[in-house]
Image 1 (cartoon, rainbow, N blue to C red):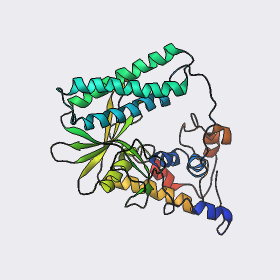
Image 2: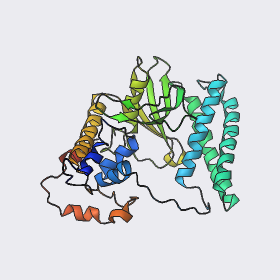
Image 3: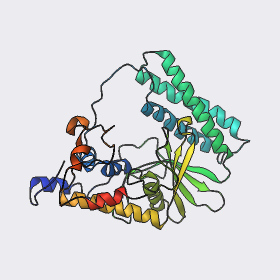
Image 4: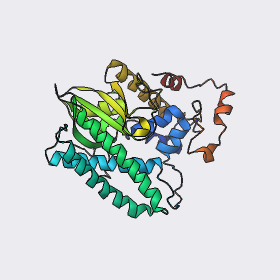
Length: 330
């Protein structure tokens, strides 16, 4: 990992450019720190990523499914708003269903041309599953009489993406009270119909990775908390009740995990930010994986699969107490 960076060196100067006061981070990048500080270094600081190797499409992978779902949701919600069909209800559902079919066909056509599936039947079957998931998501949205979608793909700090974003998006990162400058894109901001309070929702299309009561889950799930804080800054003057992970497909059984924006959540975010800031300031980003973090890590070719075993034998006086504190958070 990155350890023992002497002050006054070129290495220290390079590391200083990544301090919290100098640059922004996405929630996903920060989540790598809790899994392994060295992974955070390789990903967020060095910008290393697995090499893409083109291959014929034999099945839709989770990333491709997620892309189809997210792009269709954004396109559909935008058209529903343009036609005055929001908030959705049972009476408006038939027309919304028609628009959903058209939006998915449009998005799928774009991706079919790009992916060039080797087996058409695989593409058709995968697309049918996505279509069924989206139909159920839409039905559940129409049945929700408490919350109404108002902002879609609300982004901040993503200067390279001007299209496909909400009108309230900003090009500058959002600076939070804890000192973190955060960037990202919130899938959905909803308004509570009774009092106008806001909620930030992050759509997930894979298996459920969180549980009721989770706030940051040891620093590994930061979107709900950070996105709620970002909405508080982007849309001032209205209360923000919290963030939400919504596993919006049959794979996740349409499970919702709510994270209230309360003192506990704010303190948890401050703890994570403090740990990252300390690590960057000291130049202490060793290979210190959490339990099972190496199992599916993209960076195993860099440092190998045995770091978790090796770290257990270490007796370094500079053990990472702040990292341990982060991993102990609910």
